[in-house]
Image (cartoon, rainbow, N blue to C red; front, side, top):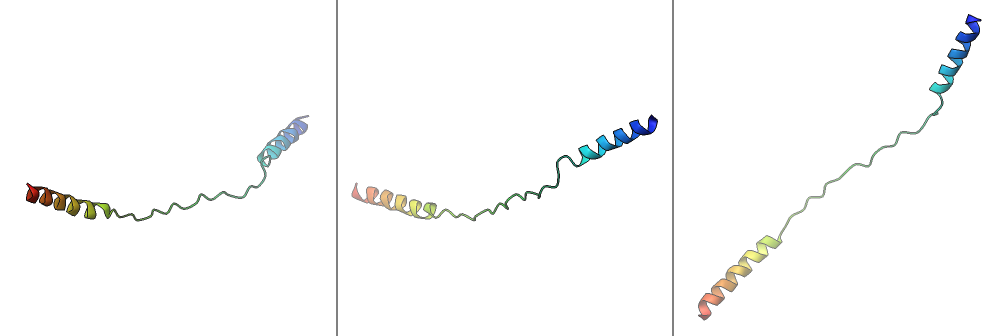
Length: 59
C-alpha cells in the first residue's frame, strides 16, 4: 500500500513538472536611442538680436 501511494505521489509530481511544456524564450527588442540636436536655438537668438537692433535703429 505504501508503494502504491509513493508511486502515485511521484506520478503527480512528475506530470506537473512538465505541464507547461517547452516554450521558446521571448527576447525583448533592443532599445536604440537616437542622438538629437537642436539647431533651432542657433537660429532664433541671432534673429531676435537682429530685430532688436532694427527696432533700436528705427526709433
